[in-house]
Amino acid sequence: MDDQASSRAVPTEVVLRRARQSDLKTMCAIERASFPTPWSERLIAGELRQPDATYLVATLDDEVVGFIGLWHVLDDGHICTLAVDPQHRRRGLGELLVLAAMRQALEIGADVVHLEYRVGNEAAARLYDKLGFERVGVRERYYSDTGEDAVLARIDGITTAEGRARLDQAWERWLAERGMTVVAQ
Ligand SMILES: CC(C)(COP(=O)(O)OP(=O)(O)OC[C@H]1O[C@@H](n2cnc3c(N)ncnc32)[C@H](O)[C@@H]1OP(=O)(O)O)[C@@H](O)C(=O)NCCC(=O)NCCS
Image 1: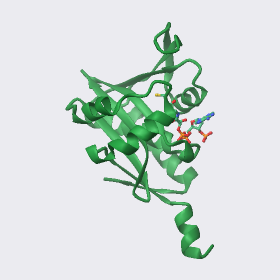
Image 2: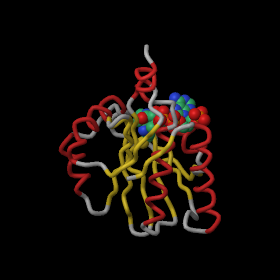
Image 3: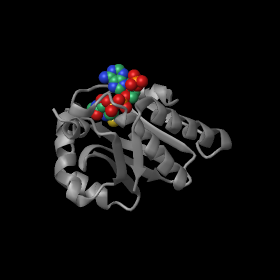
Image 4: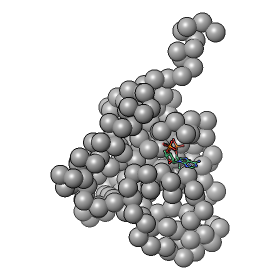
């Protein structure tokens, strides 16, 4: 492999931007690869049009490799979905998307971000624990497809000086640990 080919093989830049309708097909493919009961293309298309939601994608070499959705619920943010292409997992992209969603929550003035995940979802549990989300409850049999319980988790005080500093530190730590540059568009 020549130098050019090897540098293409491992992208060193990740772009974060708002999801567009033209991303739908790729988002749906990632959705299908990530969830036992994936959202339909129609549902995701509707989500992208919602004024009270922000959907962000992460791209590598112009290819969408992950996305996150944040609903703006009154003064709170709610992470309603998060998925990374299985071929690009364990490289920090899920973590980066959550950090980007938290920055977005900060921008809309949300002091709290909450979410839920399947009780058996070890990757999600570890990811949210790592970022300081606190487990605050369990909703029994929340997922009707499998009957699994949902873990409810939240992070408070993100608009406070301490919250902002924590978020900045997590972002800086991510850049230092992953050795990638992030372009936020
Ligand atoms: C959950 C998910 C988004 C994580 O994405 P990812 O890009 O692989 O995660 P990251 O590489 O950013 O991992 C960040 C941290 O999360 C934890 N983590 C992620 N995947 C993990 C796994 N398979 N096992 C254990 N811990 C894991 C680790 O703490 C990791 O930090 P580390 O790299 O320092 O160990 C991805 O596994 C996914 O798309 N799963 C299917 C959909 C889903 O479950 N979405 C979340 C519920 S809404």
